[in-house]
Length: 148
Image 1 (tube, helix red, strand yellow):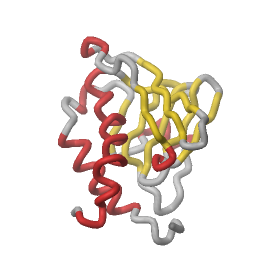
Image 2 (spheres, one colour):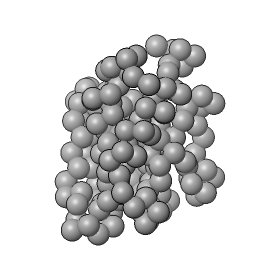
Image 3 (cartoon, rainbow, N blue to C red):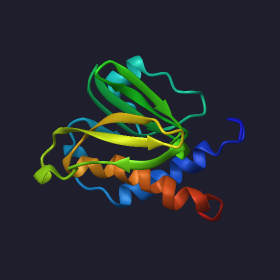
Image 4 (cartoon, rainbow, N blue to C red):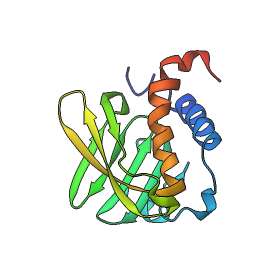
């Protein structure tokens, strides 16, 4: 589907509703933001005009990600990553609870082409942002035309 027909607004709306239903204490998250790039990422990230940020995380210049209405991209220790969430076959989060503490952990995304991407993320309650972004693509996206 071309970007002119891709349902960015609908994905954004449904995903945010779904993620916010499952997250707590957003104001206490250290690095993760929902529905915004945040000041530091806004300086270094260029989204396509119709693309919408859903979950973002900026730890430092070497550890950040942006999960949007059409892709997951960012940097981990100097290595850039970029893929469509539809190409991810498995998301491995490791110890995302971390005793409720906010620390930085690395998730591994296994792609359909056999490659793997490593993505930094904030543990504790903030981990529910990217985890429910993942769940949106496997549970809600397949029935998106029936939702709203």
